[in-house]
Length: 538
Image (cartoon, rainbow, N blue to C red; front, side):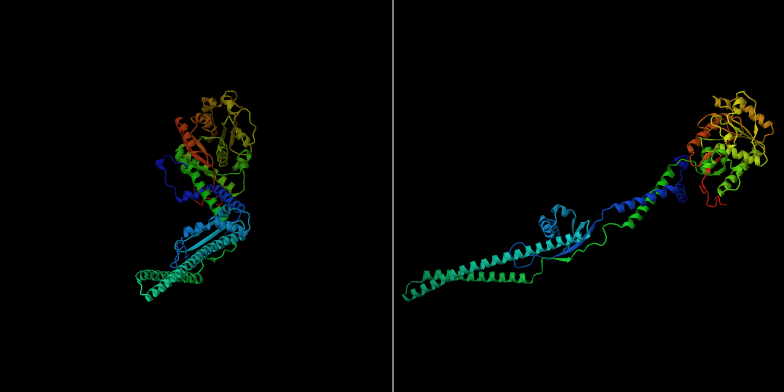
């Protein structure tokens, strides 16, 4: 896509994007296929893993100081760490009887929770579905047993402590009661003998207070013990497995179908992006507007793509063939339209001598010159085709004529007279061979002798002189010869000609004072740069 400058660049339209995809559809399809194959290989190379899930409900549990009141609410973050502790994992290893370490188990263990839910979610991943479920359940069960065991141990310790306290208080109470009874006996004896009982009364008051206090302490301790015993009988378990894990039916991640579809879509996306990028970076002159802008002239012909067997030799003489596919018919019609354009130039501007060239080799200039000459001759015009590509002559091979015989180079070097040979089987068409391979082809085409040849042919009642020269960029031959003819037709290969080359061709021809008659777009793909109705099948 040619852009003359940043200021003239236009935003790409939807039509441009669709054309980019059409031009590079094989790239898009190749990347889509590559994505499909890559996704398929990836899906089949994965080691399937299975994740089993078990949930554990946590309830308030007695912890901290010895109390018979409200139990402590669980801290989920702390309990998660307890689940992941060595204590739990070591017990799981022992229960399952497996050869593993706690760290190895914990690599595949994930414990989650939602705040204020008091539920721990245990996820365990393994290459075996049943092993994943078994291990997840083992962790959940072991954690629940540990938490319940801790609660029972705590309560049992409290019961034992209270019972010890009761025994100690009871012993102290018995001693205090014995002392109180002895003091009462002593006071009774003193009253019988009328002795002073003041000191006995004081001791008796203290002993009574001690007995009362110890009795109260004993009752309180017994009440606390009964409360704990009742809690042991009625409290729920500290942790309960809500939902045991079951063996997963399918492996983790996406299945084969979604992965393959995703790979196909990704490859397709990369193909489309690549097509857009290449279109933006492509400087090939693919459209008529590109060619016209670069050369400063109009497109007067458009030749469709031909098979490899028809790009050289006698097979490239499309105008001599008949029948064939729609593409052949379109190619013949394209050369007839080119003939009409040249005839219009002849009638309107008196153009009769024409150089057919290109920017670089292999763009189809000789094929175009030969078929244009045949088309003109078939219309009744007298045509002389000059093989002026003295470096790599091609026309002789196309027409099945022997090369390296005296011809143009010999005439230009004064070694022979001018000889235009009748082309066998084609009325009104003559060919001037390239002649013996010269050492100085550029100097020969730049000589007055070449100008003399053109004028001599025009005097011979020749209506059209079509000259096939070397490409403009590779040599100076075409630019040198162009000064002696009425104009130049530039052949543009829509699959390889860069707009920068066309700009150089234009500059070189303009410096020589040559006239650009128009451009011929060769190897034009059907529908490229045109509407969908412009098809070979017309």
